[in-house]
Each structure stands twice: as structure tokens, then as C-alpha cells.
Image (tube, rainbow, N blue to C red; front, side):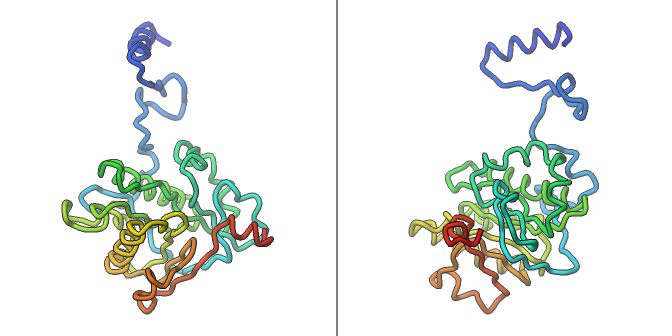
Amino acid sequence: MSSNLKKLSSEKESLGIGFVYNAVLSKKRKAIIDDGCNPELVAGARFDGIFEIPIIERPKNFIIPDVIVPFSERNKASKINAAIGYNEMDVNFAEVLINPETYIKDFIRFPMMISPDCSLYRNAPLSVQIINVYRNRAIGCYYQRKGIYVVPQIRWGNELTYTTKVLPEKIAFLGVEKHSIVSIGTYGCIKSKEDKLHFKSGLEAMLEVLEPKVVLVYGSMPATIFSDYLHLTKFVQYDNWTKLKHGGKY
């Protein structure tokens, strides 16, 4: 490390700020500061909206998996027609977000994968929610361009993400083509009355904006949320992995 970098590193450490020197630590990156956005992921991608969210292309054919397997459990799936999903704590698939290129050979052995379900907490700043929509689409379109069949995971946070009350676009749905196949998850997301209210409102907005042909649902589909929309598209429900394991199916 050069004397200038050593000096700068010392100054950063004294401030308690994490600092990564990719020019020194990685041959793949040339940036001195790693902003975590992996710009190489979107090389050649098309973009959507004022925030330029990378687009996950609509596939020519819709594949319906038999089961959705969490990323951390992917090697335990016994069925061939399984989709890799990310309906689990973000920390469990953090390495995919950091080094997605290392999983290409791993993922291509599966018929399909769902784009990373980066959390959109309703109490998170809007900027953070936008970033996690971006990460979802950026990694999804990256794998798609590597030959992997990718279904976009649609996740919305507070009403700022699925309405135009503040922004001119419903950011939760950017980067996804109309009339496609998409995935959503209710598992752990509809516990409270407020959760159910936001989920149903976001679901209605998603169906209106994207008009999907197929919606894969990871988790339960309570009638109080879904009954009003069953005629609008084809919903395919999947039990969560914990329930499947306890039921002795895996």
C-alpha cells in the first residue's frame, strides 16, 4: 500500500469509518472506494423510470416451479423443478449481493431463480427503499444476461413506494415489464393489521401497474387479502420452506 493510502487509511480508521481499497485488495475492481452498487452488473442493461432502475426482461415462456427454495437451503432441495428464492433474512444471502459473479455456476443448475428479496422496511428512509429496489433488479438482470431464467421479486415498503403521493412513479414496480411472470411473498409480511393493509394496497397497485400474467406467491394467500384479485391473474401459491420441512416433504 502506498504511503498516501496508508495515511488516508489511518485517518479513516481514527474516525471509525469502514474503508475498502479495492485497487489494492481486488484485481477485479479499479475504484478506490467501493460504493456497493456494482456498476458492472448493469453493463448492457436497459433502464426504467427517472431513477433508471435496471430492467428484468419478460421471458418468452413462463416456467412454473414445483417449489421455491430459500437460497440458504438450495442444496437440500430434492425436486428438480425448483426455483431459488430469497424469502429469508437478508444476511443469509448477503454474499450474493456482494459477489454475485461467484454464484453463476451454482444457480445455472436450477431451472430458475427469483431476484433477491432485499428488504423494504416501511420505517426505512425512502432512499434506502429505492436502493433495495435497484439492487433487486440489478442483480436479477445480471443473472438473466448470464443465461439464468430470472423471475422478478416484487417487494413494496411504505405507501411512498407503491403510490405517487411523493414521487411521480411507483418505484416498487420499476424495472419489471408488463404482462410478465413475477413473484411476491407473504411469509412474515402480513402479521399485523397494518401489515395486511399495506400488503393489500401494494398488491392492488402492483396488479394495476404491471398486469402480470402469473404471480408466484411464497406463503399463505388469505382470502381477506387476495379474494378481490383472483380474477385478474394466475396466482400460484407455495408453502414456506419451514412448513414443507416440518411436513416431511424435504
